[in-house]
Length: 82
Image (cartoon, rainbow, N blue to C red):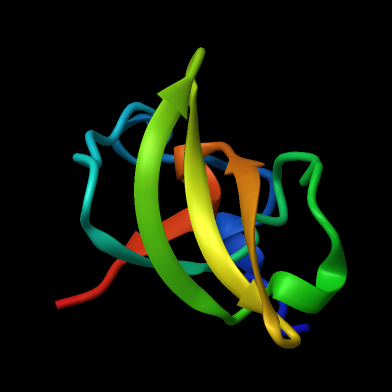
């Protein structure tokens, strides 16, 4: 796991906290170290598709082994792919 630069530690950009990600977009799971992550470590770095919303979090469909699973992840831990 790669750490943050010293001046970014403990800080969080509000734009990343409130970012808009539409359904159907491809995203990558990148853990924000300043906020507790409620998902397993094995999915960090994997990419998947946003399939819905649950409260403030996004439902992300990821391939975990041979199965396709749906994880509930806050948008601060997601990075849009092009």
